[in-house]
Image (cartoon, rainbow, N blue to C red; front, side):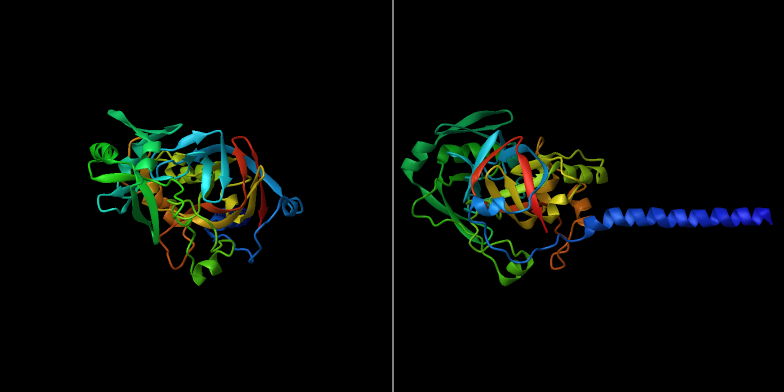
Length: 349
């Protein structure tokens, strides 16, 4: 009888323990599978006075600022960056102010040519220098590019965009390193070129009410001109793909934040304040095959990681069930200077 009672008690404890373990597992993972909440439509912040009256929470600090001079090429790490409409950077050094195009004038990115990530741009005064492993550097005088005024058109997704061609010598150098005909265009703030804005449908505005139709975008960025990620989210993803060493550059953030309360905390951010700059969290950042490219070798992961793993738990759009989300695209309400080490404050949904 005593033996039977012990067995019954032991079995009951195991059952209760199993339920508890399962509950803990579900509670810690289900929140990461939930789509980010979307807030009601709110007005654009117009002044610092409005900001002072808002309830802000410190969530971390800026650990890295990245300017991608050439779309899909290696970044330039900076200690500070000026953010304003259509621009992240300072002076000529602005994010994605150069774009590669094919011989037919079509946009060329790392999605089509992974070795673009090995191109390292460096800007000094009016000279852009491009380097590539085992290849002599190329020097481009941007004053001459502007004087030549060879204006050309390409498309970034559904938008026509323009730029000044950087010349035949540049085209020959690019063909030598990438093995295909392509050219480099420079967005020199052409006076007769309208600023690029985001084209939205009613579906977009319903899903993402903080994304404005009049939000400016940098000329060659995929969506908005600013993208933020947290080291905590990348670290959590790393635990899920231990066979691959993840670098934040796989995800190409402009602003990398560290010290957030938990992974994916950024999903719930509404407004983001860094220094005097104020951003809106307008949309989770869609992830594609570019995340699988090793930025040190220019080679895609044969197992499609980390994209394959992201698809298992970060796909939220029923209309697009194979596109995962990681990081947040930002719209800008108030300009200002960002610096590495700045505290990051947010309001949450």
